[in-house]
Each structure stands twice: as C-alpha cells, then as structure tokens.
Amino acid sequence: MNHHADTGSFIAKPYQPTGPVVLDCQVKNIYYGDFRAVRDTIVPIEKNKVTGFIGPSGCGKSTVLRSMNRMNDLIDSFRFEGSIQYHNHDIYGKKVDAVVVRRYIGMVFQLPNPFSMSIYDNVAFGLRLNAFKGDEAEMVERALKRAALWNDVKDKLKNSGLSLSGGQQQRLCIARAIATEPDVLLMDEPCSALDPIATRQIEELMVELKEHYSVALVTHNMQQAMRVADVTAFMGVDISKGCRTGHLVEMAETRKIFESPDQALTRAYVNGEFS
Ligand SMILES: Nc1ncnc2c1ncn2[C@@H]1O[C@H](COP(=O)(O)OP(=O)(O)OP(=O)(O)O)[C@@H](O)[C@H]1O
Image 1: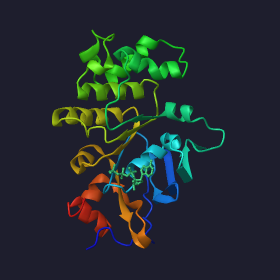
Image 2: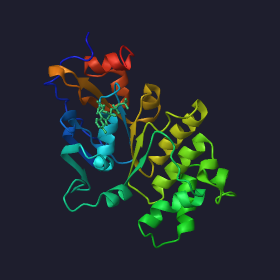
Image 3: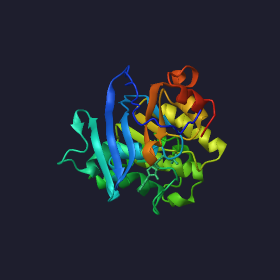
Image 4: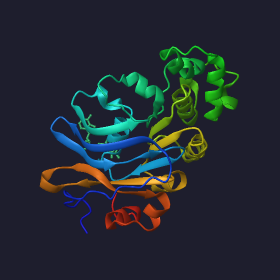
C-alpha cells in the first residue's frame, strides 16, 4: 500500500463531539505563499479534554495548531481560509487583536524557551502584558503550583529561568502560559527535547491541566497520544498532482483511533507501517 497516495479528493468524516466545544476549528485551506500546506481539516477542540494531533512529518500538525491562536500571523506568506470560532467569535475576524486571542489561547513550544529573566518575572510576563490589576504574586504562585513547579522554585524565584533543568524550564513555560488563565492550551511537541522522566512528568501534568483548561497537543509519539489524549486527530499527506498537502484523515476517541479506526491509512500509521 502506498501511504503517501493520491488522496486528493478524500474528505474526512466529521468528528461528532461528545462534550462542549471551546474552539471550533474549521480549516478549508492554509497556504504558505503558493504552497497549499493543509486542506479540509475540521478539528473541534472540546472543553476539559486533551485533543491529540498525530501524523507523518509535514502533514501540517503544527501549522493547524499555530493557526488556532494566530501564531502564524508572524509569517508573511501565511494565509488562512476557513474559520476558527472561540465562543462564537471568529479569531480571524477583522477587528480581533491577536494579542488578546493569545491571552485566551496560550501556547507551549517544542523547545523550552524561558525568557532571560527571573523565574518570577517569566510567569508574571503575560500578566503585565495584559495589564493585570489583581494580586500578581498570588497569580504567579498559583500558576507555578498548577505547573507542578512551585516546590522546586519557591525559594529561588529571583533566580534566572535559564538556571532550571530542561523539564523544569518546560514546566516554567507552562506556568507562563497558564498565568493569564487561558481557556485553551496549545502544546506543540512539548516533550520532544526532554528525557523520559521529564517527559512522563509533563504527560502527568497535561492530564491534570485538562481539569482547568482544554488542551490541543501535537505529538510525534504515539504512546504519548495513547497515554494523554482523550480524542485524537490523525492527519495524512496528499501527494496528488505533485503537491504535498496535509489533511485530516480521521478524528475519533483515542481508543478508537488506535484499536479500531475506520480508515486503512490510520490503521497502517498506528501500526507503525509508515512514519
Ligand atoms: N514558515 C513556513 N513557510 C513555508 N512552508 C512552511 C512553513 N512552515 C511549514 N511549512 C510547510 O508546511 C508543511 C506542514 O508543516 P508543519 O510543520 O505544519 O508539519 P508537521 O506535521 O507539524 O511536521 P513535523 O511533524 O515534521 O513537525 C510542510 O510541507 C512544511 O514544509
């Protein structure tokens, strides 16, 4: 079976959410200049669940994730067609400020990227950016506790964020992202630079975080999707007509994706027949 086959006309059966949808993400097309990177990908993000995104390299997982809080606005050639509704507001609406979008839809990146400032200031950064008027120290403490980092750092809040270990740095970035109390947390391969122990800690943290937030997680690691994601979206790449366009193949409860998917392509991928 040719896994990078001509799937040019294939459109995934819509996933039927079983709970409230926080971010109704309907991608028609995403372009970088003339290159169509993603088409036809409808991926509702449900409240208090972890939604995992898996698929071969280049299928557009990060592109879709980064569209969800307008992170790709920073790329000139980026063009989005479709709609992403956050509580019935289109985040691509003309009057919508991307900084405000990111206050509600936070992001954690692949490489831990603490700012070169104190642990405390890292977490307070977003609060200050959003002119937060309440008790800053309390919010910082709360975010660090939720990120399971408080006990490690409570006596050295003035130390540089860069002085922490990789796993701690990633938890600091999570604390920074949740300090402003976002609704949605977008996580783009948050464990790819971490050792197995730090990875498991972050995975456990993701499961705790979904009590308060709705999480969208891109991962290369299928075991991680199985351990953490409630719902999983599998994306593939269509190579018809000399293109390389990613699209949704199947989205379902994680167990179904891994045990009894509808699509042969999904089954082949989760069985490790291609990557
Ligand atoms: N800034 C950019 N400019 C042009 N093309 C881009 C840009 N970012 C990504 N692409 C292209 O868009 C397609 C999708 O990339 P993306 O990084 O979203 O895929 P991915 O599924 O996350 O891949 P990986 O698993 O390798 O990270 C790829 O063909 C990639 O080369």
